[in-house]
Image (cartoon, rainbow, N blue to C red; front, side, top):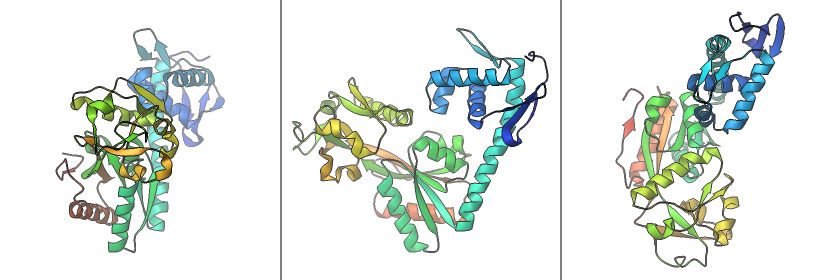
Length: 337
């Protein structure tokens, strides 16, 4: 096995590495995992960044070290440090991944440009808003084709920053413009509703006090993609003087597959009006007292193309004409703000 001080050589094309003349195929996934751990120097933080659990990440790094035949990290109970081999790999892996990511992004952009298509990301709560923007843009610019892609906020922001998406309807995220090099416009304060069993004591009331709701067992998504929403909801309830002390984890599945525990009375949840419109879902939606809203923003590519500029202008016009902002003021944040 090569010693730590020995030079490692490889080429990124095909992502094949050569150690002592032996070619070893390395998956891009393994390189991304390695770079995340090498930059964070902490397996827990790297796992959060990669939206995965720590155990499979540690296993993947061990597999990578075994495949390469080198030790990449020195692990102790108090710290994680790069070895010489790990430092060399990090120096080469960063530009390799950047080049590959750039090639993929260029291919996607060229495909979308050739087809004249604007891709817009939309999360679970923002589907109706995204559709409304597409309708408005189509009425004003019928020559533009628009595609909606379902994507959670962290991924939408990354893809808009990489110009894989023209824009994304995302939940409000502090410093998103600067972190992802995108433009961010306040778009809508979406009313939140409490999802209750039809037999719940407040199911036939005009509203439910936040304190009553917070005392219930609240349904929250289990998987990591839902953790950003969970943290936001906990903070929102806490800002009103309450804590969610009892929760029930559910799969981050389509909304209609999440609701059986609510319909049966095992738990309560939060929904938007779009989710509450299907009587077959088996639950009742009631406004909160005082009202709660889910803040949505429009993240768009920066600098903007003429088509993206048109999308942003239409979004602002619809927002202002239909009074979408009820809690926040209209604002625009740019990467350099």
